[in-house]
Image (cartoon, rainbow, N blue to C red; front, side):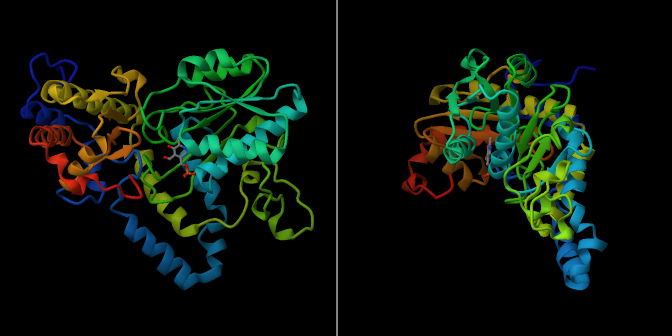
Length: 426
Ligand SMILES: Cc1ncc(COP(=O)(O)O)c(C=O)c1O
């Protein structure tokens, strides 16, 4: 039986086609695991994932039952002290890592600071002549800002070389110490070839660090198959762990005990409760920790990771690509005259889980959509982002979004001055 998708329907796509796609969606039962308002189409899981229905019960459990009743004993009795590693082990298979290679802790930016410093330290010992760090100039700014801050702090000879997608391979040569890139671009959703880039880096004697913010939970990731050295990412997007939930660090086993991240707090010490005067690094992944972990937030991660680890990531990727294909196709069929430009790759195999659309009035158009409870977001100067989280977005959601877009454009509803007002968060 052929399943209808935007790819194999040759006539114009209809509402009934979308209903049929939903009926055959093997992931449709996951929608009930999220608490989303009935009248809302949520297309912003690429920024903040939806709330799992179990989140409130989990928060109550951590706050009332554990903290409230067992107080400080909870560090031992409820596994609080090991939580960063326990949850890291839960996350590991989603990103192609092994147990003992991942911890959940701190923010992505802080974690990037730690692993970049650790990688540069390794290289300074093995190949001090290598001074370059290859990064993508158009990457999410915090990665670049963090690297700039570290280079300035080191007061060293290191130099950041910014390259865009097509220039990356050429920028990696014998002078490069570290290649530090994001797999899925935050704005366009374009996917970089982790395998090829990591291989090129290694062939030149460089180390490879990957930011997986827009990959983790959205698609299969193969860190160890690609022999990646370090990785970081967040859990509040496709892993649905909650606003500001801790990020993660991956350090390949072969590097653990060989280098050291510089935020050398007591949680990364070999014996934290020995309270020694001098820092002695843990020889395993715990060295990537710095201080006391945010237990309430980590508790919520358990719920998000439980859902993510029960979903088949191949199916998740397949569906988010199909949703994106449907969106692009409907935009072409129903909104051709309104000047939208799809800036994400049209080839789904080169795209993550979102579609970015440029339009000079993108901000106001997105506000008009949000006013109709269709929630995406906007990235300056002119990009609307539509995130297709496969666990809770339906094909009919995509249909209804494009109908709303058409209505907003045809009747010029975006011209309402209310939609021109810029909010702090766009
Ligand atoms: C690629 C990438 N890196 C990092 C971040 C954010 O990092 P942090 O959680 O430290 O604010 C984002 C946020 O969207 C991102 O897209």
